[in-house]
Image (cartoon, rainbow, N blue to C red):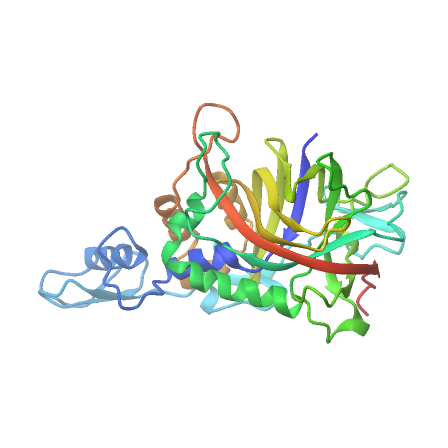
Length: 383
């Protein structure tokens, strides 16, 4: 049975992709298949030979200058600009309309959960945990590494990390917001185990999404000695389960610590992570997930260095994630088609994740570190 790891990361991958699509490096004049070149080619195609202003294919005004290789396009903004928070842009009518209902309406009561497939509230029969640990590690650093850093996903003895290789010029833009979100508590990921072992035998590790405990807001969240307190979001558990205890959505059942080397996961492990980007989010699925790192501590797990979360990301899953976002959110970037085309040209597929003999996925690696922490309870509902 495949297990799903659902993490809330900051906009690491998406920030880098969008930075690439927007031409963040303003000093560059193109010279390749980049978005700047595509824009210039499109505009030039709509210009007249004598340099007069003409109408572009999309109805926008195109100004061209004879003998000049550049052109500018004043394209029409869908729906005249961003819609309200509870609206989306209907591209067929070019009008803002109410967003379709997501989840259950009215909201579910205490003791119920929302079945998203049926959009119905159902009685929750399993119970959330009341205690955690005794081993708890809180992720204190997340970072997209250089393309030469990764896990060996294809068994050739070499690290795989096609994503970072493709985004080499944009890693700084991606990692800044990611590292800040971990330090300020916007992202809280707690790794929890009730049967941690350091003798090389297997133990289970649950990865839980959480918040900083209200009474602990001034704690240094990345300090190796602070031992800060956190609460766990109920979303970390599967409320649909028929077992007495609600199981964690995030679970690595085969972790090992052999001589300080942490390892776990494998070909059947899957995880999802959500990238919040200003007013929208991309949810991406990674297969063949692996978790590894260097553990400090003898009898206890004190901290982790040189950690890696690795896996494979299929292009079709990226495209499906983009399609799930309202069209107007990508309007300023040229539209969904431009973003998909950019990803297709930038991202090299190097992994055959589904075993059909065709490399349909790109390898991914994320560096991480962790420090000791405490889980004191569930995150209370927002008032």
